[in-house]
Length: 224
Image (cartoon, rainbow, N blue to C red; front, side, top):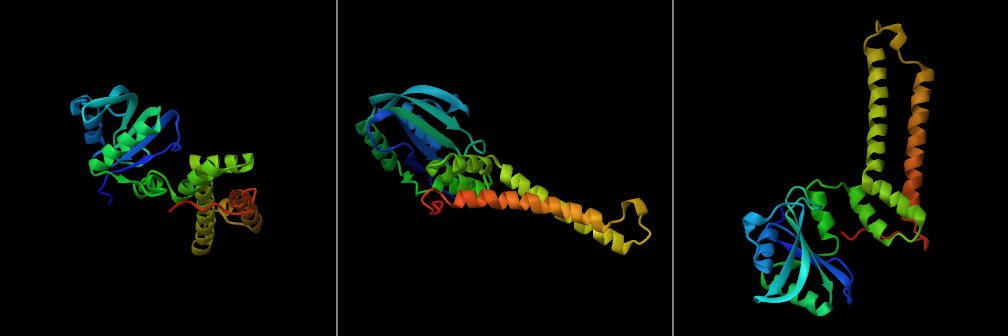
């Protein structure tokens, strides 16, 4: 079980228009109150707040804060996202404050790992996030998006249900010979069902192959 609160700069570490710092863990709400002087009772989940960023009681920027209350967040924990102007001096001051407040910098892929451990996403969706980020072709982007949306997981569940249905029908026919003739299993019916399953599996394998080969022919593994 995760007990520490983590942070990460989730945009590139360069001067730019906007920078986003993500915080996840039980201290997210407390951090929000410390950085902005907002009262904890005023914090509502899934709401954006325009507040000044305070470091040592000095205003260093005006930013947008979004607090996601657990379990209604990406990681399943309390999450705070800070959208500041993307000046590295401002960013570094905020990061130094977070570290002073005992927050730990997230390891690569740790937000997704926490989401998986908290049953917010499955393994295929976790893989898809990284593949989508690094996708350099439309085919990989489309396949990654399907995985992330849960479409592929749903297809696999349907295939599993179809297989179990065939097994149950065969067992019923064997165990109960008096079973209604109109519902008895036949070779033709079994072949039709198996062909359907085979078609769905072939489509799933094709998508998997597309995802595992990205233009340079190498699989970009998920940061785990």
